Length: 178
Image (cartoon, rainbow, N blue to C red; front, top):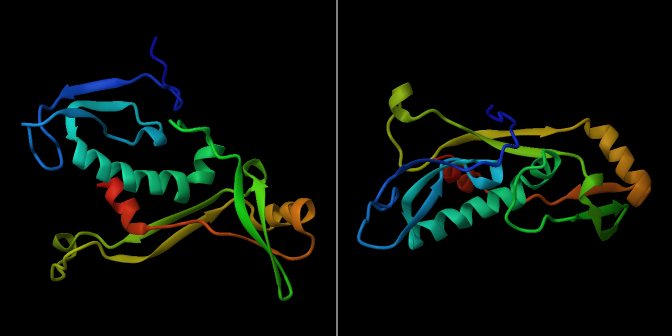
């Protein structure tokens, strides 16, 4: 019986490509490539599908998104990781003119998720083509924000404001989707 759990960790090889899917080179050593990043519980892979140069480029922007922008949602959803999980998140407590920098256990943090909103491809809405990706804004989601902030204030910081600095690079997210 197949395990259809979203946390199913079985690797599924879809095919052997035989050339880098990014630069199309086939005359160099190739490695496997996840279709959906491993850190988003991606199990589907392509064998012999990525050269070292392209793999290091994709790895860099995936690392940024998975370890920064998606850190809190991934930890909450118990998604896979090849590295030891972070147990604390840096935060700033502001009370009046004073600022304190602290580290808060990740299990005490609210779930924060920021996603870019992109325009459709120019060919779909008849506007002139422009090089690059055009964004129109951001979608921000947080669990019961005020309840989470109040819980944090009581446990870590008193009456001040608690702020998190979540690194967010919409271009890296777009590249990961592509």
